[in-house]
Image (cartoon, rainbow, N blue to C red; front, side, top):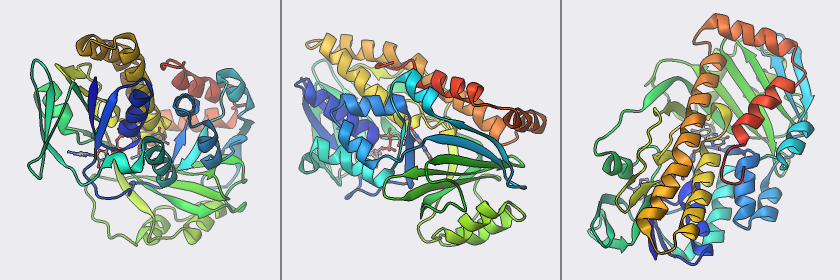
Length: 385
Ligand code: FAD
């Protein structure tokens, strides 16, 4: 049984590792010529960490991860703490600590685990098709690859998705831009082992620890889609958008490196439930492009990979049965996470300002119970629960 995987992001690589482990022949093709992940870091929640552990990467993941012992919300304007609570109840309930990690390091870890030399870089898929006995992809250089099945882990702008659905889809702008990067830990911004989030006016500024004394930071700024931005000017843009905010936020703006600060317009896609056509399947953002508001897009991609492995372990000789099992295991769960993230996104970014004001009030009386319950409900429900 041979799989052709398009895309060496966290979804495609996790799938490559997972399927290799159960004895499938795997080929991975990636359009870029080198490892250059977009974005600074990612919070790998406990469900994602369990997937990485399942792939045999437990100690490697823990070595890259920041330690988040507490979580807090801070009034972005006054700097007053609205709530602060321990993450321990969450860790105990789900049985695994979450790990924020640098994207480049996570990507490198997955590439090395799969085998760097076995990734076919510089191969942009331009067409996919399937027939009675095999599925075939064609690359921009005119070459082709053939397998018993094809996994399109080709990200948010997936070409495979178009093939599987039979038509292109329009993604939805979520209404905000996310600026993100890495800075050295600074307690003037937030405690070293805390995920600190400043909120006010439908905007959000967050720092969380990753390995080696660094904070992953991000700023969410609501603005219309398609605004001009010159790379390197993040400090000016953020200073303007966060005038009058608390000293910790000003410190972060002073400290960040504008040259390496990323700016990403946030989009998502309505959930859809057809993930397979014949011998071709979508996986990861190709199947469920979500806003990052509950930090589950990448975790969900890793869950897809594990579910794909389970499906082929159960149906080793039947591609169609395995892909059908994969699809039925995943679409509802992944679609639910997309909609949960969208809901969270709307409250955080003041789509309805009254609902957001009510949330700020709730945060002032929060002891952690409600927030942890919400996060746990995002974490459970995947292939490793
Ligand atoms: P990608 O990572 O996009 O990889 C797709 C790969 O396919 C790319 O390498 C691309 O070059 C390649 N490719 C595309 N087209 C072709 C082609 N035609 N031929 C060959 N190769 C191709 N998720 C979390 O779990 N936690 C978080 O905290 C989190 N934070 C986020 C913050 C931001 C600002 C954003 C934007 C997203 C965040 N996410 C988070 C989501 C996460 O980044 C994605 O869900 C994840 O990267 C999806 O992985 P993927 O492998 O499906 O797609």
